[in-house]
Amino acid sequence: MSQAHTQPHDDLGHDHVHDHGHDNHGDDYHATVQDYVKGFVLAAILTAIPFWLVMGKVIESSTTTSLVILGFAAVQIVVHMVYFLHLNSKSQGGWNMLSLIFTAVLLIIMLIGSIWVMFHLNTNLMDMPRHETTQNP
Image (tube, rainbow, N blue to C red; front, side, top):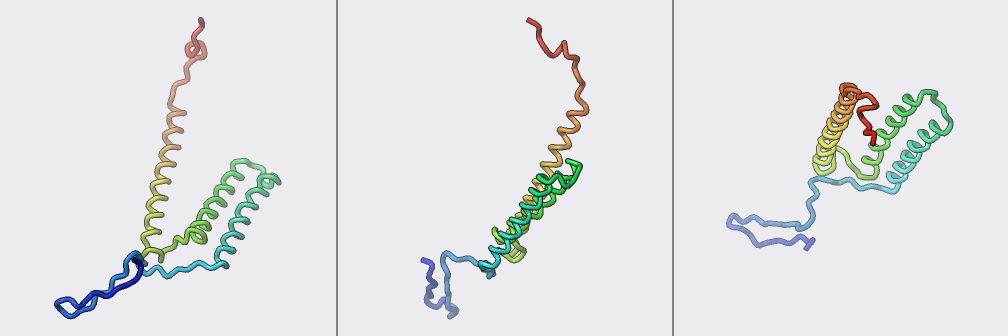
């Protein structure tokens, strides 16, 4: 049923052509092998650099190393979305990108909110003395 067929003229004399099963919405993006190779090379580099940073102990501070690795991970997520998932502002009339932004905002709100709640629970809970927390038989 993916073939277009023409119905007879309507009352006003217009022809109706229906395309069943294909709804492009102006999505003319076609990936090439060169695009996949670029994505693969970028993903490999973005994996190798953090590996080298950790194994070579290039950065003294573990906190700084973690932040740098998180930065590389964020860039790698973008590379995967662009080169392998083909998400850009043109696909599906921009709805894919809008959905992605909405999901990212919700994820950030949930992560930051969870960390904030856990941090404040940790700092605001009272420490109980050791002898009250364990039962002696």
